Image (tube, rainbow, N blue to C red; front, side, top):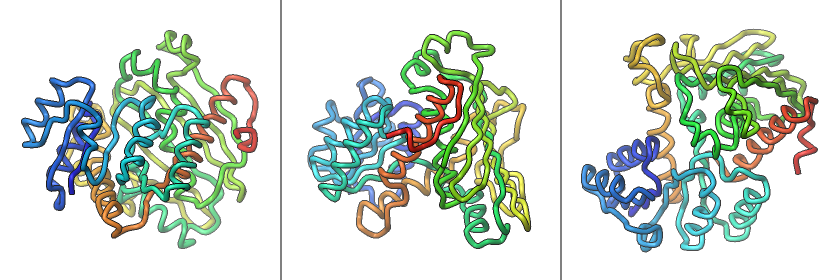
Amino acid sequence: MKIAILGVGRLGAFHAKVLRELPGVDELRINDADAPRAAALASELGAKHAASVDEALAGADAAVIVTPTGTHAGLIRRALDSGLAVFCEKPIALDLESTKAVVDQVDKTKGRVQIGFQRRFDAGFQEARRRVRAGELGTVYGFHMTSRDALPPADAYIETSGGQFVDQLIHDFDVTRWMFGDEVEDLYATGSTLGFPQYGKWGDVATSAVVLRLRGGAVGSLDAARHNEAGYDIRVDVYGAKDTIAVGLDPRTPVSSVERDAPKFKDPAYPTFFVRFGDAYRAELAHFLRFARGQAENACTVRDGMEALRIALAARRSLKERRPVALTEIV
């Protein structure tokens, strides 16, 4: 397969290296707005540097999009117009209208697009989902999700990220739907700019919490932080009538091989998502190649991406208006 990868910042470069190692990738084409960066990585990997998006897509079989969020929707549509299978990092877009346009195009053209929510491929999350769906926990009454970055990204990133709910907690919103097989009925969100008052200029927060209720009645509490020098911290506790399970901490929910071999917390070797989800990213891209070849079902559709965004936008509205928001309000 000939794969075009668009965007090789931190995550894009990681994806490029993974793709180069996966069987079935005959040619890798690398394009980035920073041409010297793209050329250097292409040279390192023995890949082709594509000077433009058109050059990268021409004759390719699939595209992997890891560019800034504001460019995702347009690039997905260009790749679909070329008949390519597409992998795109979350979210599809920062607004619902642009996201719906992509969903409509996929529906009309029967296009193949997998959205990048790597937690679906993490062994611990998958085991927790299996136990929930199998009824091993009994009736699930509640759950708690924690997402904390070690160090905050640059302010320039925060300004264009869509905010903590759209950029960071959207992973937790997606996992909620995927793990419990249920939809969010309503939610209440709050947050603070403590330590990062500049975030207020963009209507964003550095620390936040969301309480949500699923249609089936389960109640979840989610918290997120941009700054936690103890280390990158992702945890999920699920409380059921018969049992409780804790993703990443419970021995029944395995961690990645990379994380297992790394010192945890309060150590510079454990600061990033590459450590926590290294195996998941690899599994996600391997699945995408099978999906692109017609050998596997889509693991995360554009509609899944749209629904996660709707929850994030509801949380943003709740924060702004300081009131509970029903998901039916986000249309």
